[in-house]
Image (cartoon, rainbow over all chains, first blue to last red; front, side, top):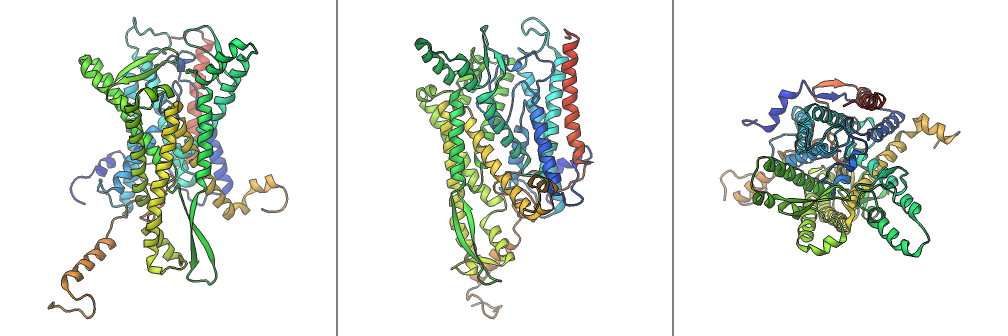
Length: 501
Length: 89
C-alpha cells in the first residue's frame, strides 16, 4: 500500500454505483436460458430511434465513424449510438493495465478485486459520458434534430440534453446488463454475446431486410436488404442489367452485396480456423489407463486480439475527431487542423471520408479502389492492426489466467500430466506450444480482418470474426452447463418429450 | 567456500542466493488477473468484466431487465405521443 493509487479514486463513487447482486444460490439452467433470451430481446428491441430526431435520421447524420460501427454495434440515430464501445474500452484498459503491472493492484486481496471491478464500471460510465458529450458538441446531430435548422436557429440546448440523456442512460443500462451476464445469470460474456447477436441479426437484415428507405438527394426509394433490392430492380433489359448489378454491389447508403460476401467468406474462414488445434495427449497420475487429449486451439485467445486492435483504432478516431472539432470551433488555422485530419463529405451516403492528416493513416479504406490508390495508408493501417492484435494475443495468453504456469497448476491439482513427459516439465511443454498458438491465431485473424476491410468491408469482417468466435464461446459454455445440469432442466424435458437426454 | 554452510545445495553462495531469490519472487508474484487469483474472470477467449460482488447500490438482476424494458417503453411512448399530437417541437 504505497502512496496514492488510481484505484483509491474509485472508493468515492462506491455508494452511488448500482451493483447487481451476486446469485444467492446456483442459478438453474432454465433460468439462465430465460435471462439470455430475455436480454437478447431487450438488445434487439432497444434499436429504436432517439426521440427528438427527424424520421430516417440515420441518413441525415454526417458520419465520421462509419468504418468501425459494426464492430461495436453502434447504430447511428438509435439508442445504441455508443454501442458497447465504452464497456469494451474500459475492460481492455483496466485488465491490460493490471496484467502489465502498470497499476498497483493486488488481485489476491478481495478488497482490491472489488475496487478493480467497480473501477471498470466507473470507467465505462465516464467514457460513455465523454463520448456522448463529444458527439453532441461536434454537431453530429445538427442535421437531424426535429424542427431545427443548423444555419438559422440558436443552439437547441433542450434537445441536446434530451438526446444525450436518452443514449447515455441506455449505455448505462447496457453496462448493467453486461454485468448481469458476467455474474453468471446468463450464458457467456455480456459484451461478446451482444456483439454475436448484433452481427447475426445484421447479416440477415442486410440481405433480406424488407424496409424501404428514401435515398438521399433523390426521390427514389430502395429496400434495405441487398437481395430484395436487387430483385426489385431487376429487369431483363440488356442495357440496364449492367447498371443494376453494379449498383447492387456498390451502393453506399444501404447495404450492398460486397459487404455480404465479405461477411460470408469471413464466417467460413473463422469456422474453419476454430477447429484447428494441437492435441496434447494427457494421462492421469491417479487413475490408470485414463487417456485423454488436451486441445490447444489455434484461436487460443478467441477473437479478443481483433477486438482489441479495433478498440484502439476506434478510440484514436473518436478522440482525434473530437480534437479536430474542438480546435475547429476555437478557430485554429486550417493548416494546423489539416495536420490532424481533413474530412470530405460524400453526398450519397452522408459519410465523412478522411482525405488527409494523421487520422487518415489510421482509417480503413472505404473501397477497393482507394486501397489501390493510397498504398501508404493501406500499409500503415494494416500494420497497425496486425501489430496491435499480435502483441495483445501474446500478452493476453499470459495475463488472462491461461498462461502455461496457471494451466500446469491446474493439471497438478487434478492429477493430470502429459503422456511421455516428466511431471516437472509440464510448464515447459505448454510454454512451447501456447505462445506460438496464441500469436499465430491472433495474426491470422487480424490478417483476415484487414483483408476484409481493404476490400471495402467497413469493419464488417472484424465484426463477423468477433461475433462468430463469441457465438462459439457461448455455445461451449452452454453445452458444458447442459451436460452437467441439463437433466434437471424442465425446458429440455418439455422440448424433447418423454425420456431423458 | 561459505561460512554458513547448509548441508547439500549448490556449492557457491552466489548460486544459492540466486535460486533462493528466484523461488521467493515466484512465490510472491502478484496474480496478473482475477482468474489467476482464483476468482472467476476473463478467460482466454471470453472477456468478463464483473465477477466479484463489490459494495454498492445492490440491485436484483430482474430489476435491471425491467428497468431496460421500462426505459424502452418510455421512449416509445414519447414517439407515439409526438406522432399523435402532430407537430410537437
